Image (cartoon, rainbow, N blue to C red; front, top):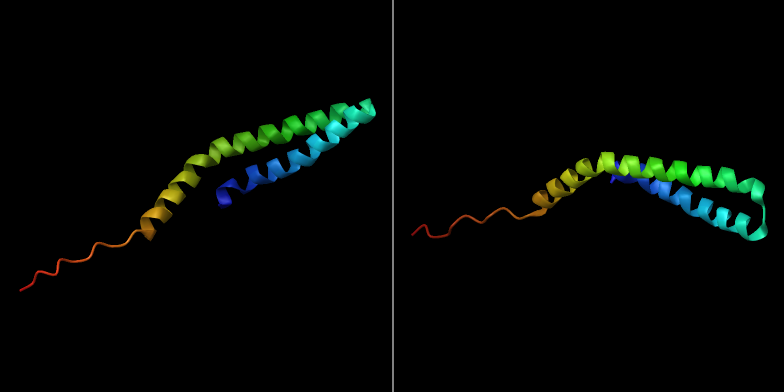
Length: 80
């Protein structure tokens, strides 16, 4: 899961920023709109970029782990 740590971090940052952006719009604090909007766009872009870059490595690691979990075939027991 280390491949997707940064995209999850970016998603965790974007959530409060969106809440703050909604609060700034609701209260009429227009001076905060631009910094919050820029931060949301920046962290979203970083998260998506890293997700696209790291997804193949994550998928390969999950495939490798699944292959390790499969049982080895039992040898035939027909040795009369």
